Image 1: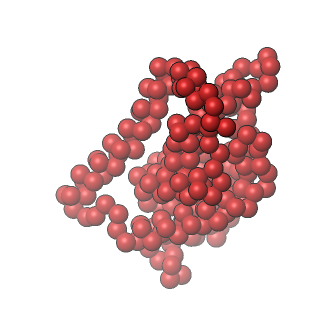
Image 2: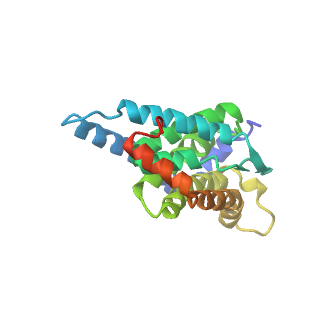
Image 3: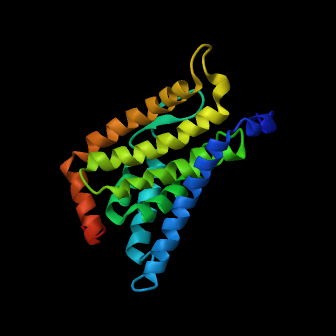
Length: 218
């Protein structure tokens, strides 16, 4: 499982390293920017955000156990496992969403790891699920928020597939097309489930109550 690490690492192009560096720096920049603003008034993560974040991460983690379909080289369609995380990100913004997503990524890594390289692990778990928190960049319509979060996760998985799973590409098929098709299939199917559930009035009500901080007492 862990053979040929050095060969795979040398196959990473300069452009890929630049993209990975930017992806790592953006959340850190946003975090410290938010922290700087917090020192001028308010707190970075108040009790309400922490409570809702913990609940949403736990719920996403539980839903991730309910697999509707499992892919042969990793990845699966779950029962809307990203939905609680997307709702949380929309309610409290992308910073909180990214941090919650990173936490969920580490939990999923412990739950069902698929590891061939440390950089692949970072891409497929903390960064992929952290990118779901980008759903908080767009508040409405909710289907657009879900699409942004799902696309963020797809981008991470796509890069992982191109760099570390190219040996699974069928003969005569482009590595980039295969990675996009493979990862887009299961992430896309789960996104369709999530978008459908976001149309349910009760789900929208929960989001409104979370924003007001009354969902726990409702």
